[in-house]
Structure formats: C-alpha cells, structure tokens
Amino acid sequence: MTGFLAKRFLQAVVVLFLVSVIVFVLLHLLPGGPARAILGPKGTPQQIAHFNDVQGYDRSLPMQYFSYLKRLLTGDLGESYKLNQPVSQLLTQRLPKTLMLTALSTLVAVLVAVPLGLLQAVRRGKVSDYLLTGAAFLAYATPVFFLGLILIIVFSQILPVFPAEAPQGESVSAIFSGFSGMVLPVVTMALGIIAMFSRYMRSATLDNLTEEYVRTAMAKGQSGRRILVRHVLRNALIPLATLLGLYLPTLFSGALVVEAMFNYPGMGLLFWNAAQGSDFPVLLGVTLVVGVATVLGSLLTDIVYAVLDPRIRSVA
Image (tube, rainbow, N blue to C red):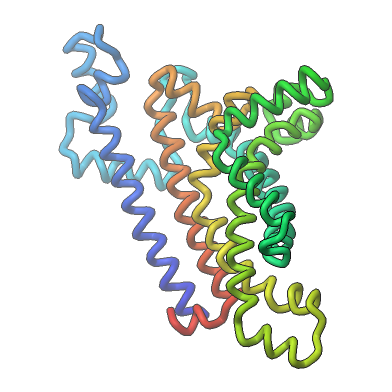
C-alpha cells in the first residue's frame, strides 16, 4: 500500500509541475505579452518598458519561470489589476464557498443517483427503468443554465418558495444564515450530476450482477436485497469513485455558470467577472487552483480505488 501511494504521489507532483508550466506559458501567450494585455492598447512604449522592468518580464524566460515558481511556492499568485487585491486573498475568500456549493451538490447527487442506479438495474427492461432512463438523458442533455432558468421561473416566480439570488456574505457562515437561497443553486448543479452518476451506477450494477460471486451468494441462499447491498454495491461504487475524482473540472465549469446565474459569491463568479474585465492574474490564478484540485482529486481517487479494491494495489 505504501509503495502504491508513493508512486501515485510522485505522479501527482510531476503533473503539478506541468500545470505550473502550462499556466506560465499561457501568461506569455497573451496578445502583445502580459504588459500589453494589462495596460491595454493605449499603453505607451515607456509604460510597457517600465511595467516589464517592475514585473521582471524583461528577463529571460527560464529566470522568469523560476521566479514565478518561487512565488507560487510562497502562495503569491500576483495581484488583481481590477480589484487591487492579491489573487491569493481573493481565492482564499471565494474558494471555501465554491467548495461548499460543489460538495453539497455532489452529496445530493450521490445520495440520489446511487439508489436510483440500483433501482434501474434491478428493474431493467421494465417501465420504471425506461422512464428513469429517459428522465436521466433529458436532464443530462439540458444545459445547466437552462435548468437554472426553469427552476427560477417555477420556484421563484410562479411558486415563490425559494429566492432567485443566492445568499450573500463574506464568510461561509453568512452563506448558511440564508440557506434557503442555496436550494436552487444546489439542485441546479445536482440534476446534471445525478443524470450522469445514475447511468454509471446502473451499468456497473448490471455488470456485477452477472459475476460469479453473485451466483455463489444466491446458491448459499442469501436474499436478493442482501446480495445487492453487501456485495454488488461495493463493487459497483468503484467506477463511481473514479468518476468523482475526474469530474472536478466539470464541476467547476458548472459552478461557474450556476454562480453567475444566482450571483453566488464564489470562485466561479470571480472567474466570470475577471473574464469580463480581462483581469488576467485572477484568471490564471483560478486556472492554476482548478488544475491543482483536479490533480489532487485524481490522487484521492486512486487512494479510494485502492481501498475499495485491493486487487488494484497488487496490479499497481
């Protein structure tokens, strides 16, 4: 187990290094360079030269990269040119809120999708299976923004049950104080995840129901429910655990749309506003954080995968 974890950790370190290289290259691929992108077309050559001298962009690329890597290791992601705040401070304020939104959405999705997928597998080929499969395809094919609009129209205008705007506040506790405003954003994100996870759960369950250990358990006289819960469920959760770790970038893209729709003060809304205002340090800082989260999510997935299935450790 230790060797397996060490191998996966070293792979994660290499990928994180490559992520830092990609973000650094993106910064230097901006049209006209970072100085022109930030100062705009009206920036004079003297202003551009002064900016490059202050920021160190007049040095060689290797020296710039090592300086950039040194700042990253100390948590310095630059400064927002629109908000006049360090990017690390902005991310520290916004990241917990986005994590809470995505965690709640994922939790709701898993709690609904797992029993839904099991039900579809058990009822395969019956009316309930076709109805649930059709609903899942419809939810998965519908864009997130359209789902959000439907929920706002139905539950905020026609039936004024929940507010159309997410709770505002500087801290996570302030968000919890108006938790009714979290219902629509969470449900909007969860619907698409439920549709995908339930399909994977259905397929994984059907695959496991044909395995030898199921027939052996049936031959021993165990009930169908006991076999499903104690044997099939654990093995069917393995592909879902993999999907959870690799689904992080998609979760962030969904959070970006949802946060912009419901004015939720998270990292997605920060990215949206930065994109509209060409605030490149914020855009690159968010991109780096999402890349790191994706790598760590993949590493966590490997660990969970190995815990659920010891055969993975022996193969790896």
